[in-house]
Length: 206
Image 1 (cartoon, rainbow, N blue to C red):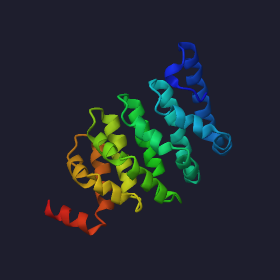
Image 2 (tube, rainbow, N blue to C red):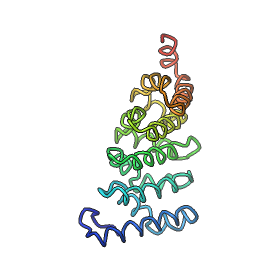
Image 3 (cartoon, rainbow, N blue to C red):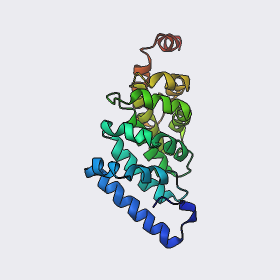
């Protein structure tokens, strides 16, 4: 499966879609076995595929794997953050929603890989893009992005990167969103970020 998605014929592309979907379904219940046998490389490889359905299937697999924080180390080593960064520029709404879900799972503060996650987020400049998605035209993407920002802000290793990415200012704007889910997540994110004196001072000035 690890071939260029752009080089696949129509028939091969459908096979790849189904194969990655099957792999994603396996990750849900057998993540340890799948990830130990090269499954994560396949998911990462196709996460930024030009075919939206193939990419969505692969990112869904990363979401499922990332729900188990004990798997974060192998996901990071295999380039999951970099793959999500590439996929974050997709015009496909469902792809963007899944990217946000994967990032929210990887930002779990209970993960022993938090420092590595923070480093990769900074290196890929992914947080500014994530924060910008809070103002996307699609309500589902808005909600997913706001929840992801809140998750990042809850992680003491990652929150500084979110603050540097303009998270405070953007979440202040999001408080007035017509989307209730966005406003709620923005309030949660600001509550986490306000533990830093420089953020608390700026909030008091508003």
